[in-house]
Every structure is written in structure tokens, then in C-alpha cells.
Image (cartoon, rainbow over the protein chains, first blue to last red):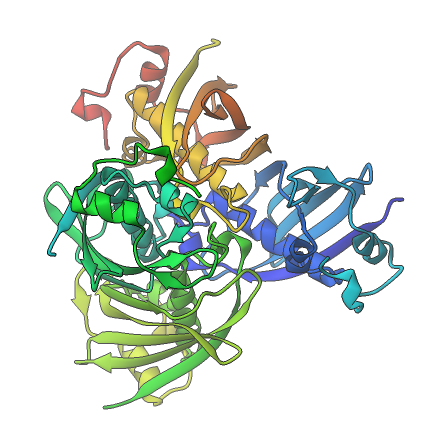
Length: 147
Length: 147
Length: 147
Length: 147
């Protein structure tokens, strides 16, 4: 399976995000990555909050960032997140942050599916795979959630 | 009882704490207050992490800050936290942040004791009161902790 | 003059905003206040970034927060910011953060107008006052900006 | 020249650093890297604040992180930063974050020397190279600084 899902989100840069260089602090791009990832999952019909309610988390085990040009205060930037599955057990997400077509930052994060109760890696839940594969379009079945 | 406890902690200002004004972002002083509070509790023999293990949290219900002069990158600042009990159920903590005797920020926070399991306000745990009143000096009795 | 301006902005709570209590960290509400203030100024036709280009900043000299109920991860919260002028030289802004009509946090911040070059308090720039008083609707005159 | 400099710093994990997973938020490790880098430069006799006063900044152009085990609230963690020069113009810094010998996070950042006034990459300042090479031990000469 070479399914890939992609989604683009706009983010307004906050004053709190900047540092005394006058640009966004390097660590805050990982928060922008988080927002891109969150909205990508929501667009798949599986908000991360629902995933957690199902007892699953997606901790970050690797992150990589390349800074090409800085984002500045009040910039309206675009985060494109693209996700693929690796070995059926890891989400590999790449990010491209741009401002008016200008490339600012690229990077990726890698996430196992983790059972919150045990702290152990697990296979993706069935409902997630159905959404991923397009078998269903959203979680409209209450029994799918929770447990 | 008019018992008051006070403790002073030094903090090095991080680059991440600054914003594009070139000074510490206004919201980050609440993190400095947190550090002052944490070290004050530790100095009483009751680290906040232990309090949480006992099932108690101290959520903030009110915070107030007055900014007199800015802290800057790499400044070594001093946070003096002074704590008193109100009506036997609330911690009222005042803060004074200085740099080489120069006053930068003052403020306070107010905290009920909250039972984590129920989310309800409760009386301070007995072990906390004994430390507060100086009846004991530290939690050296394993039965005191946990449960 | 008893002119008051008000504006409401929606904010999605980020994972990065939460702490191990499972709710938004107390200091991050000052960032939510910043966003409410920023969008209020933008709605007046005077984005804060433009104000800074004009050589003016609005540092925070006082902040106050009362926490009524917590915001949680992925909540879509509403920040209403209401601004009035005090003694012709200070902006006094109150904030009301709600989630589906439920009140979460209230507070205020106070800001002088500061000349960036001198670091001294100044009167509001003429263009700001015209927007404030409704004499003009937006900064469409290039000469207004800069210098 | 294969000179390498290394320095270890202790950091106390703040409540503000954690997220609702109950552990340190992934983006905050870049702040821990910053602290490791800052103290490494200070140990060389060249505090980053002095470098900036000399008109030089070290922006991050690449960052990489591998998360092995989580840091938790109130943990006293150790950041070892090790720095080498690449092609005479880039600082390549690796980081190892541990808690009681247990490896939590590894990673690296890459930094050019940038002239603040022009925004262009430059060669390291002479005073920096002298400290790096051990020709001098600290900046005790006023003419070295500023200009």
C-alpha cells in the first residue's frame, strides 16, 4: 500500500512564538508541525482527541527540521503535512511550511501507535485503518469510539 | 495562624523566553512564578511532585502580575516566593522578581488544594500541615506518601 | 470619551498548550489574551505589526487572570477582547474566554503606548486615534505608515 | 583541526514543559538543546550574549531529535552538548540528554555564523577562534568586544 494523505493548514504567527532575533524561535516549528498533523488527522475523520479517547497515542520518536527562511510575527504561514504508513505500524509525516509560496521550513516526524494503558506500541486501530484506506469516511458509529 | 514561608530561587533567562521586543514575553513570568512556587514547596519538604503522588493538586484560580522593568536574555534573575494560608484552605503566594536588587515584576497567585480523583477542593493533607507548622521537617516516613 | 471597542476571536487549543494536569497551562492564557488583543487591533484597521512599523509598541504593565474552568486540548474557545482608553494614554483591555457560552477565564491587561526608539511612554499616534474615533476606517494612506 | 568542546548542564523539568501525555512536550527539547549550547559557549569563555553584542548570531539551520525515553515533571536531567567546527564556518553541535545515566534524547543542531547587520553568513570572529583554539582563555580585553 502506498497510500498517502495530505492536508494544508494556515497558521498566524503569534508574538509569543518569536524570540529576540525578531523571528519565530526554532523550537516552535515543532508546534507548527503538531498543528499540521492535528488538522491532517481531523481531515481523515479521526481527530487526535478521539484517538486518545480510544486509548491510543502517537508519541514522537524522531523529528527533523531544516530552516530555509524565517517566519515572522503576524505572518500567515501554510503548513502542508503529508502522511504515509511505514511497515504498517509507524506514521511518517513530512511537513512543508511556506509563506506566499516561499519555502520556510521542511521536516518530518515519526510516530508509533502506542497503547496508553500499557505504554507499548500497537497496530493501528481498525477504525483508523478503515478511514486511512477510505473504506469508511468518518467515525459515525458510536461503538467505534471508546471501549 | 500567621505563618508565612518564603524562598528565593535564581533563574537564568532562556532565549526561548524572549520575544521580538528583545525582552522576556509577558506570559513567561507565570512560568517564573511556577519555578519560585515549586522551589518554595521543596524547601518546605513537600515537593509538588510528591503532593501530586498523594492525590493533591494546586491549580491556579487567580494570577496577577505587575511589570516594572523587563528581564532580558541571559539575565540571572531572582524569584522570591512568599506563601501564606487563607481560611485554612487556600495558598496565597506573592512573588518578587529582581535582578541585582532592581525590581522587575511583582504579582501573586491563589491556589486551592484539589483532590485529583474528584476534582473537588479539599483541606490540605495532614502531612502538608505538619510541614507547614514545623511539627515535622520532612517526609521521612514512607507511609506518609502515596496511598 | 467613553468609546469602547470589542472583538471576538476563536482559538483552537494546541497540545503544546496543555500540561500534565491535562488542561491548558495557566501561563498560556496570556498568549490567548495576546491573540484576542491582536485581532481586536486588526479589526480597528491598525494591525499591531503596523503599529510597530510606526515605531510604537504596547508593552504590558499589568495583567490579571481569574481561572473559572479549564480549557482542554482541541477545544475551540472564544476570546472576547474589549478595549477602552484611560487618561488618553493607556489601553485597558478586558478579556473573556468562553467555550460554548461557558465562562473559562476572565482578566485584563494594561498597556502604555511606548516609543520604541526612546523606550518612553508617548501619546497614541494620530492615525491610531482617527481609527479609534472612527474618523477614518483604515490606514489606506501610505504616508500614514512608517516614518 | 579536529578540536571538539563538550560541556554538561543540569536542567530541572518545569511543569510548563509538560503536556497532557504527562511528559515533556516534544518541541521543548529544542529549548533544552539551547540551554546545553548556551552553557557550552559560556564554558568556552564566549557567552552567546557577548557574541550577539559583537554583531554575530548563530541561527539554527538544521535540527534533529531522537526521542528514546520521556523526561517527566521535576526530573533533574543532564544535557551534554558537544561542538565541532565544519568547514571552518559551521558549528555542528550534538546533544545527549540523560537522567541518571538513562538516555532520553539525542540530536544535533547546525549553525552558521551570521552577521546581524547584513543577515549574511560570515567567518567566526577572531576572538571566538582564539577561544576555540585555546590560544586565549577568556575575553578579558575590552577591545575584543563590541565595535
